[in-house]
Image (cartoon, rainbow, N blue to C red; front, side):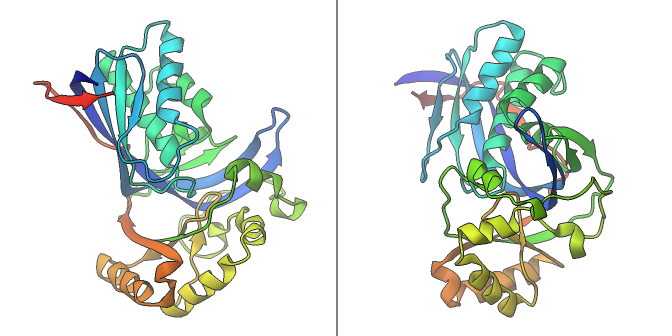
Length: 300
């Protein structure tokens, strides 16, 4: 254990996919997609410490984190700039792991922004953008956050002009799928692909919220449709899938309504089958702050 100066802290927001279309498989093995993404107010926290060597300490790991994108992203940026990685990180998780909420990608993007600021680079410096692209498909989106259209393999980001605050009820079924991303892409059938890209539709209702991973997911986890049926009976609306799942979401009119629905589900038999939380839209990347007068914390 060593005592390290705290240089900066950042909040890494989760995201929702407000619909997800898969267009085609690419020659490089990735897939072309089209999805409206929206950052929401569920956050991991990353602290950056000085006098380090790129180590990442996960302070409260409840579930195993197999792909630590904090280290990957920071290492990619150091490589892009041909310099030593001279910091360590502490990661505190609140976003469920492998949920379809982008926690790992957001952690990677937040580490890039913290490290870029430490090295006096703007967050959209070419080296930062290149490091984000090489780290993972969703990482580029989290450099800006808010609401945006993601195309290509998810790394081509077009910001949206929509900034309306929306509340969401997030329903997280207790389902685990081994090697989820690879498994879900392998489970896609020809009928799950869209014939061509479509223009995004702004309202959060209707067919624009369709997710190409829905049917493959329900085939792999056949208990999910009955869970969603019961949520629909309680709330009046069927939840929508985010990413490759298993997290689902409902847009709701107000915080009061969201809390009411959360209590309904929590008092039903679903309380042992799902986790539930409430979030609202966040219209930027996660905030971070530098520590002008470094505090001290225990690092590994």
